[in-house]
Amino acid sequence: MNKKKNQPRSGGPSNNARARMRAEELAAQRRKKRLTVIIAVIVVVVLIVGAGALYGYWQTNKSVEVSGKPTIVGEHKQQLAKQDSSGDGALIWGNGDKVIDLYADFNCPHCVEFEKEFGPTFQQAVESGKWKLRMHYLSFISPQSMPMTNSAACAAADGFGWNYQKALFANPGKSWDDKQFFTLAEQVSGSTPDSFRSCVQRLSYRGVIEANTKYAFETQKIPGTPFLKIDGKEIPLQGISVKSLKEKLGL
Amino acid sequence: MMKWLSLLARLGLAAVWLSAGFAKAFNPFQSVQAVKAFQLLPEWAAQWVGWGLPWFEIALGLLLVAGLLTRTTAVVSAGLLVAFIIGVAAAWARGLAIDCGCFGGGGQVAPDQTQYVQELLRDLGFLALAAWLIWKPKSAVSVDSLLADPEPEEVHEQEEEPAALRGPVQ
View 1: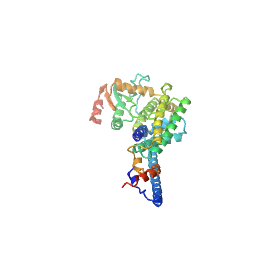
View 2: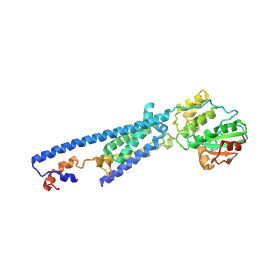
View 3: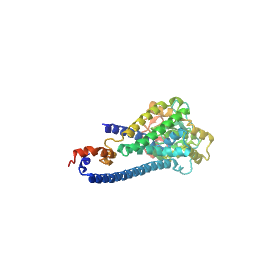
View 4: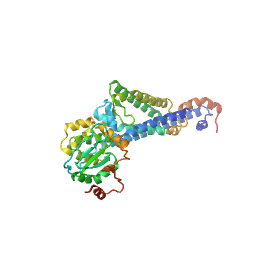
């Protein structure tokens, strides 16, 4: 506002003409400045959107890793204990009398670490024949948890759940689509059964998993995941080691 | 006064875009599912829209927070909102049972859990904010106001007479 008043306007027509010329010059400068700003903004927006889209592409197309030769847990029985919505369902392995209850979400970072460190010990427990491992897969950390957990239940129903769940844990943070679940099933079991396909596509276990999750948090009041119970007794995971776990399991 | 109302509209719309964007940006899988649920785009297009759209919303939000190119951003916002409104209305008209996934989530829902009316009203509300900004893009505390020439053209023309009367003020 001040500059306006400072413009020399009191002179004659020549002064006016000069003022007009200057105004035109200013207008040209203004247009140039505006164009620069617009171009800069477009470039930045394109970069943001492009980088974001590539992030999505990368998240979705990260290659699936199945590490090593799949292990098969000997005598096992895989099922969702109760396929109604009572909520006390789990994937069960082993025929032992004594029970291990493990609660996890495929997208909980500590569960991934926990599985890495103690997975072999639990497998040993199942193979010893003394224990029954009840895996309570819950879905609450990420929207990805539901399709992942569902696909694990589908795999268990088709008899290759053990290796399949390991493979899911071995690819933390990956975005999954149905086709990649099929690929993973094939890598783990050698084929992708039609029953697995339709189970994945229909999210067949959604209701069961939702009920399990609700039951775990609201009825059993678990504080979070991972959460471990041996013979019904909560085991604090603070400072637990493979050695101390093996002692508890008598291995 | 108007400038402050425009600032409110700007920040309101910015909050909408940023929250909508961030809710989806780090869940590319979910975001793609939400776009696919509308059944409007071919598979490959739905994928790229699912991946890119959240970041575009974030970019719009950042521009609005800064108050940079406010009118242009408001026009683009309005366009996007109209596209969303058409998408939701089309889903409703075709009898799909989906959640718009506007703020995360999305995909199929039970037929009695659709919220088309709420979603449309909400989008119309956002559209009103954008319309306000198209009408009154000048707002307080904005980069636009810093960049703007202190002497806008219209004012220059109008000032001819009074300036002459007033004479130079040095």
